[in-house]
Image (tube, rainbow, N blue to C red; front, top):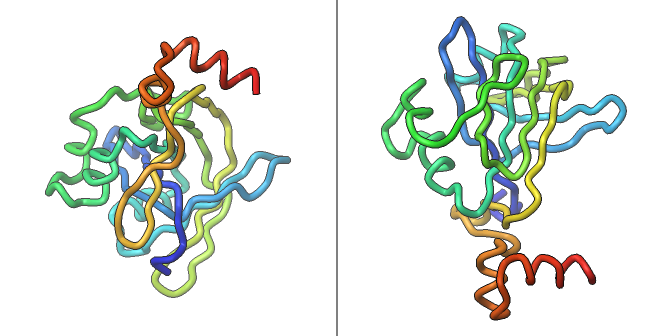
Length: 174
């Protein structure tokens, strides 16, 4: 399984005003019509109990510069529950879900179905609201570590010697 490279996301929810979240690498688009995605969650994870209540949830797709969030929400920094939200810029989706403001993409979802298998569950979420950023590399997880895919505007500018705006215009012309 370590050979499966995956994007890195935060799965978050708010139940009774209490925010919770986790890092997830098993997130995928399920359907375009209606817009639906799936998230695989360990049933022992504290975030899972909130999802089973039929709560709305959010998915924030992490960029290459979000490694600290991936580590924090994976429990590697010792922070738990609402403490994980202490840093960073957060917005609240119309469904009450916290989403990372500068994520590559953000999805506000409603739980549509939950399929339990072995230690994990597949949570099917109907996307109610979505937003996407225009640039930045993606954070990926592969072989037990984090890496990035793609370049940010600043990295592209440094590599080409062009300003970020010039680099973007040049890239758009391709």
